[in-house]
Image: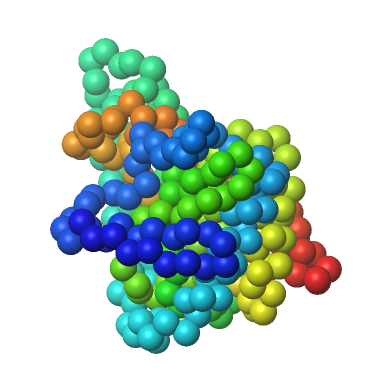
Length: 278
C-alpha cells in the first residue's frame, strides 16, 4: 500500500494506492474519523459540509485538468458507456430466482424480491438515458470522491483520502455521485436543494466547467446506480465480511435510483438553472 499526499488550496489530500485487487471500493462499513467527528455511511452532510465538499472537489478537478493521463485511453469509461443490459437483466433474474426459491424467506429476501423486481422493470430505460447524454468532459479525477473518504472537523473539511490511480473518467460522474449521494437523496427531504448547494460551491471553484457537464451530472449518477447490483449480488452469490451493511447499502442505493429516476426532469431543470444563474 503506497501513500501520496498532495496539497490543494488548504485541504490535505491523501491517496492510498493498492497494488493488488482491493475489490469493491467505498465499503459502507468503512469509518473515517478526525477528532470527535466521524463520517459514516448513514450520515448526511449538513449544508456547510456540502459546500465544503463541493468547493474541494472543484479545486481537485481544476488541479487535475491537465494531468497527462487524462488524454489517454479509458477502458473504464468505454465499459461504463456501453453497459451490457442483457447481462444485467440475466443477473437480476437469477437473483430473483434464488431469493424466491428459498424455503423460508427472511425480511431481506422479501426486500430483495421487491427491489430486484423494481430494478428489472426499469432496465430498459438505460439505453435511452445514455443516448440522451451530451458530449461530456473527461479527465483525471479523484476516482472515489464519497463521504467515507472525507474527514471533517465540525463543518471544516480537513482531508480528502483514498485517491485512485490516475485515469480519465467523466467529470459529471464524480460531481453527480457526491451531489446526489444516496444518503442525501433518500434521507434528506430537501435533497434536490442539498444537491444544488454542493454543485453551487463546486462551480465557485471550477466556474469554467461546461454547462453540459453540470446539467448531466444527476443523469450520470443515476446511470451508475441503475447499472449496479452491488450489495444484493454479494448477499446471494458471495456474502462479504460486512454483509449486513452491504444489504442496507443496496436498499439505500436502490431507493436513491428510484427517486432520481422519478424526479430526473426536475433535477436536471434545477441544474440547468444553477448554471444559468452564474
